[in-house]
Length: 253
Ligand code: GLP
Image (cartoon, rainbow, N blue to C red; front, side, top):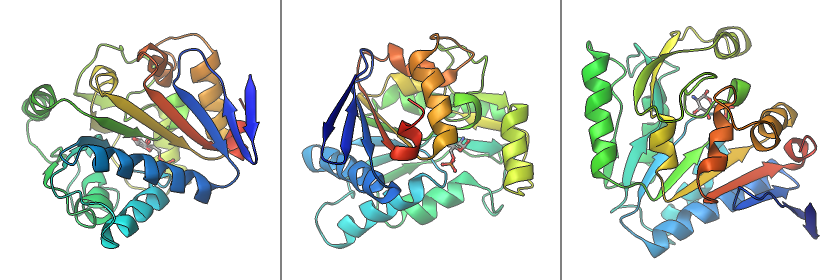
């Protein structure tokens, strides 16, 4: 069912708190930024998991603008890294940690930045170190994009929903996107927060633009809840997920 308010559409879904379609990417980014800053205004020491990706660039730019204007301070917040290629040096152009430092940790002046070390010689020790941090610190907000096949973080098709932080092999679809569509020389493995870590967040914000992501979201929201579509796990979160999409993505729902 769809409710309209001007150019805004609210698509009702029984398992998801809110699906809101806005006319442009800019309007989506504006709304996403206001959700993030409002959480920090209410809880100045909020713990937030940040996704990387092109989707997030305008969102983070708008948050940074609010911070620079003195509207909100992230100085007491704790930032968490969602996922990272493995092995991956921070100097690599595809490094997610360098994305987050440049677009989040530094401009937001976050209090603590918890990073995944994609260069660790022992990924098992690194995943369990990072997972312990997530156990010690309840997450107030997890910000997610959506990737090939409906992956969230780097939880690919087939990932068990009770999996925590782990090293994973990237799917053929993801490797194709990275190496062929994006021309990246990135690895075929990654360390990612697991679906169990993501679902434990108090609130989850998903941002997506464009028809292709609309198709993945359609599978996630209206297909079976199944490990074949990692984002379908969000329907098990107890209605704490907000999905913000543009009209192109909404055209597929
Ligand atoms: C990668 C990351 C995801 C991210 C996705 C979307 O696959 N692992 O965490 O959500 O990219 O990226 P983009 O916004 O560039 O489409």
